Length: 180
Image (tube, rainbow, N blue to C red; front, top):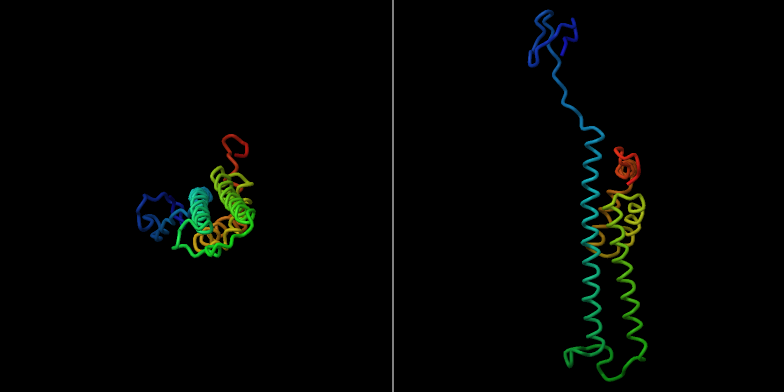
Protein backbone atom coordinates (compact mmCIF):
# COMPACT_ATOMS: atom_id res chain seq x y z
CA UNK A 1 0.00 0.00 0.00
CA UNK A 2 1.27 3.46 -0.95
CA UNK A 3 0.43 7.05 0.00
CA UNK A 4 -1.90 8.73 -2.50
CA UNK A 5 -0.08 12.06 -2.07
CA UNK A 6 3.64 11.31 -2.21
CA UNK A 7 3.78 7.60 -3.17
CA UNK A 8 5.74 6.56 -0.06
CA UNK A 9 5.29 2.91 1.03
CA UNK A 10 2.92 2.55 3.97
CA UNK A 11 2.73 -0.07 6.66
CA UNK A 12 -0.70 -1.77 6.90
CA UNK A 13 -2.79 -0.13 9.63
CA UNK A 14 -0.79 3.14 9.57
CA UNK A 15 -3.24 6.10 9.98
CA UNK A 16 -1.12 8.84 8.29
CA UNK A 17 1.81 8.97 5.91
CA UNK A 18 5.07 9.60 7.84
CA UNK A 19 6.62 11.52 4.96
CA UNK A 20 3.85 14.00 3.98
CA UNK A 21 1.35 13.68 6.87
CA UNK A 22 -1.60 12.91 4.63
CA UNK A 23 -4.28 10.65 6.19
CA UNK A 24 -4.43 7.18 4.69
CA UNK A 25 -7.67 6.30 2.92
CA UNK A 26 -9.50 3.44 4.62
CA UNK A 27 -9.39 0.09 2.87
CA UNK A 28 -12.66 -0.59 1.09
CA UNK A 29 -13.92 -4.12 1.67
CA UNK A 30 -14.22 -6.25 -1.41
CA UNK A 31 -17.61 -6.23 -3.14
CA UNK A 32 -19.02 -9.68 -3.78
CA UNK A 33 -18.19 -10.53 -7.33
CA UNK A 34 -19.84 -12.53 -10.05
CA UNK A 35 -18.64 -15.85 -8.65
CA UNK A 36 -20.36 -15.11 -5.33
CA UNK A 37 -23.61 -14.24 -7.13
CA UNK A 38 -23.35 -17.40 -9.22
CA UNK A 39 -22.79 -19.64 -6.17
CA UNK A 40 -25.67 -17.95 -4.34
CA UNK A 41 -27.96 -18.43 -7.34
CA UNK A 42 -26.86 -22.07 -7.70
CA UNK A 43 -27.96 -22.67 -4.11
CA UNK A 44 -31.36 -21.14 -4.83
CA UNK A 45 -31.84 -23.29 -7.94
CA UNK A 46 -30.79 -26.43 -6.04
CA UNK A 47 -33.26 -25.69 -3.22
CA UNK A 48 -35.97 -24.97 -5.78
CA UNK A 49 -35.34 -28.29 -7.53
CA UNK A 50 -35.59 -30.19 -4.24
CA UNK A 51 -38.89 -28.51 -3.42
CA UNK A 52 -40.21 -29.45 -6.87
CA UNK A 53 -39.25 -33.09 -6.16
CA UNK A 54 -41.19 -32.97 -2.89
CA UNK A 55 -44.14 -31.26 -4.58
CA UNK A 56 -44.27 -33.96 -7.28
CA UNK A 57 -44.29 -36.73 -4.69
CA UNK A 58 -46.93 -35.01 -2.56
CA UNK A 59 -49.11 -34.32 -5.60
CA UNK A 60 -49.00 -37.98 -6.54
CA UNK A 61 -49.70 -39.22 -3.00
CA UNK A 62 -52.49 -36.74 -2.31
CA UNK A 63 -54.05 -37.47 -5.69
CA UNK A 64 -53.97 -41.18 -4.98
CA UNK A 65 -55.54 -40.64 -1.57
CA UNK A 66 -58.22 -38.38 -3.07
CA UNK A 67 -59.04 -40.90 -5.78
CA UNK A 68 -59.29 -43.69 -3.23
CA UNK A 69 -61.69 -41.64 -1.13
CA UNK A 70 -63.74 -40.61 -4.18
CA UNK A 71 -63.99 -44.23 -5.31
CA UNK A 72 -65.20 -45.31 -1.87
CA UNK A 73 -67.61 -42.38 -1.60
CA UNK A 74 -69.25 -42.73 -4.99
CA UNK A 75 -69.39 -46.51 -4.79
CA UNK A 76 -71.31 -46.13 -1.50
CA UNK A 77 -68.74 -48.05 0.55
CA UNK A 78 -69.48 -45.86 3.57
CA UNK A 79 -72.86 -47.49 4.10
CA UNK A 80 -75.46 -45.24 5.65
CA UNK A 81 -72.74 -42.70 6.53
CA UNK A 82 -72.12 -41.87 2.92
CA UNK A 83 -74.47 -39.43 1.22
CA UNK A 84 -73.37 -39.75 -2.36
CA UNK A 85 -75.72 -38.73 -5.15
CA UNK A 86 -76.33 -42.44 -5.82
CA UNK A 87 -77.01 -43.57 -2.24
CA UNK A 88 -80.77 -43.74 -2.94
CA UNK A 89 -80.27 -46.70 -5.28
CA UNK A 90 -80.31 -44.90 -8.64
CA UNK A 91 -76.99 -45.56 -10.30
CA UNK A 92 -75.29 -43.73 -13.15
CA UNK A 93 -74.39 -45.64 -16.29
CA UNK A 94 -71.66 -48.23 -15.78
CA UNK A 95 -69.11 -46.31 -17.85
CA UNK A 96 -69.55 -42.99 -16.03
CA UNK A 97 -67.62 -43.52 -12.80
CA UNK A 98 -64.62 -45.39 -14.27
CA UNK A 99 -64.20 -42.78 -17.00
CA UNK A 100 -64.21 -39.92 -14.48
CA UNK A 101 -61.69 -41.75 -12.29
CA UNK A 102 -59.44 -42.41 -15.30
CA UNK A 103 -59.63 -38.77 -16.41
CA UNK A 104 -58.72 -37.51 -12.95
CA UNK A 105 -55.92 -40.10 -12.66
CA UNK A 106 -54.47 -38.97 -16.00
CA UNK A 107 -54.52 -35.31 -14.92
CA UNK A 108 -52.85 -36.14 -11.58
CA UNK A 109 -50.19 -38.20 -13.34
CA UNK A 110 -49.48 -35.46 -15.87
CA UNK A 111 -49.24 -32.80 -13.14
CA UNK A 112 -46.91 -34.92 -10.99
CA UNK A 113 -44.87 -35.91 -14.05
CA UNK A 114 -44.46 -32.29 -15.11
CA UNK A 115 -43.33 -31.35 -11.61
CA UNK A 116 -40.88 -34.26 -11.60
CA UNK A 117 -39.43 -33.29 -14.99
CA UNK A 118 -39.12 -29.66 -13.84
CA UNK A 119 -37.35 -30.79 -10.67
CA UNK A 120 -34.94 -33.01 -12.61
CA UNK A 121 -34.19 -30.27 -15.15
CA UNK A 122 -33.43 -27.75 -12.41
CA UNK A 123 -31.36 -30.28 -10.49
CA UNK A 124 -29.27 -30.99 -13.58
CA UNK A 125 -29.19 -27.26 -14.41
CA UNK A 126 -30.29 -27.99 -17.95
CA UNK A 127 -31.54 -25.14 -20.12
CA UNK A 128 -34.75 -27.06 -20.92
CA UNK A 129 -35.30 -27.50 -17.17
CA UNK A 130 -35.74 -23.77 -16.73
CA UNK A 131 -38.42 -23.65 -19.44
CA UNK A 132 -40.26 -26.70 -18.08
CA UNK A 133 -40.12 -25.26 -14.55
CA UNK A 134 -41.59 -21.96 -15.72
CA UNK A 135 -44.45 -23.79 -17.47
CA UNK A 136 -45.04 -25.98 -14.40
CA UNK A 137 -44.98 -22.90 -12.17
CA UNK A 138 -47.60 -21.12 -14.25
CA UNK A 139 -49.82 -24.21 -14.23
CA UNK A 140 -49.40 -24.72 -10.48
CA UNK A 141 -50.41 -21.16 -9.60
CA UNK A 142 -54.06 -22.26 -9.32
CA UNK A 143 -53.21 -24.98 -6.75
CA UNK A 144 -53.66 -22.88 -3.61
CA UNK A 145 -51.71 -22.64 -1.23
CA UNK A 146 -48.65 -24.81 -1.92
CA UNK A 147 -48.79 -24.72 -5.70
CA UNK A 148 -49.30 -20.97 -5.64
CA UNK A 149 -46.35 -20.41 -3.32
CA UNK A 150 -44.10 -22.73 -5.30
CA UNK A 151 -45.20 -21.17 -8.59
CA UNK A 152 -44.46 -17.65 -7.39
CA UNK A 153 -41.09 -18.68 -5.94
CA UNK A 154 -40.16 -20.43 -9.18
CA UNK A 155 -41.13 -17.47 -11.33
CA UNK A 156 -39.19 -15.05 -9.09
CA UNK A 157 -36.06 -17.22 -9.18
CA UNK A 158 -36.12 -18.08 -12.89
CA UNK A 159 -37.54 -15.02 -14.66
CA UNK A 160 -35.76 -11.76 -15.38
CA UNK A 161 -32.69 -10.83 -17.35
CA UNK A 162 -30.21 -11.22 -14.49
CA UNK A 163 -31.64 -14.58 -13.42
CA UNK A 164 -31.69 -15.92 -16.97
CA UNK A 165 -28.07 -14.86 -17.42
CA UNK A 166 -27.07 -16.50 -14.15
CA UNK A 167 -28.92 -19.69 -15.11
CA UNK A 168 -27.13 -19.79 -18.46
CA UNK A 169 -23.83 -19.50 -16.60
CA UNK A 170 -24.86 -22.39 -14.33
CA UNK A 171 -25.27 -24.68 -17.32
CA UNK A 172 -21.78 -23.90 -18.59
CA UNK A 173 -18.83 -25.71 -16.99
CA UNK A 174 -15.64 -23.85 -17.91
CA UNK A 175 -13.35 -26.70 -16.74
CA UNK A 176 -14.67 -29.10 -19.37
CA UNK A 177 -15.65 -26.42 -21.88
CA UNK A 178 -19.00 -28.05 -22.57
CA UNK A 179 -22.57 -27.51 -21.52
CA UNK A 180 -23.80 -29.57 -18.60
